[in-house]
Length: 259
Image (cartoon, rainbow, N blue to C red):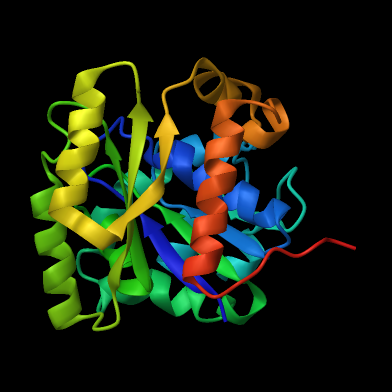
C-alpha cells in the first residue's frame, strides 16, 4: 500500500516542484513504484518530466469525469507514472464549491490505485486552496520544502495551523513527513544560520539532506528531464539520491534492482 505524501508550501519558489519531480524520480530509479499527481494549475511538474498535457489530467479525476487510473501517463523514468495537470485546475475550486464532500475528491480517487504503488507524491499549488486541502485530506504525510533564505519560515506557521485543523477534522492520520532545506548556498553565513534556525524549530522532522543551489537543477526542467537523467554526476543528483535514501529508510523500505 502506497505512502501518500503531499509536497507543499504556500510560499512559491522554495523548490517544491523541483523536489516533487526529482525525489519521485530517484525513488523510482531505486526500484520503487511511484505515482506523481500534479495538482498545480501551472503544470510545472508535468513539464518537468517533458510531458505535455493534451488529453485527460488531474482536473478530470478531481471532477469525477475520468477515473484517475485512466489519467495516468508513463514518464521517461521506469516505474514512475504521472497524473498531469493543466490550467483547467484553476477553475476547479469554483466548480467544486457546491459539491458535497469536495475535500475528499482526490482521496476517493487515490484509494482505487493506492495498492499499485509504493509511493504517491502530490505536488500542490503554492497556496492554501481547495486543491491543497484535497491533497492534505488524501495524504499520510506532508513534505515541506523550505528555502534557505532570510524569510525561510514565513508562511510555514499558517501551513502548520492548516495541517493541525485537517488532522482534527478530516484526516486524523496526517503527519509531517519531513522538512527539507533547499537552495542552500553553503558559502554564506545566512544559509547556515537558516539551517540552524529551522533545525531548532522543527528538530527531528528536518531531513539530514539539504538541497544545494545549483545551475544544473535549474536547467533540468527546461529539458524535460529529472536531474539524475539530465546530469547523473551533478551535486543535485547526489543530493536528491541521498534524500530518497532517507525517505526509504524512514518508511522501512529498501532499494531494489529493476529486472
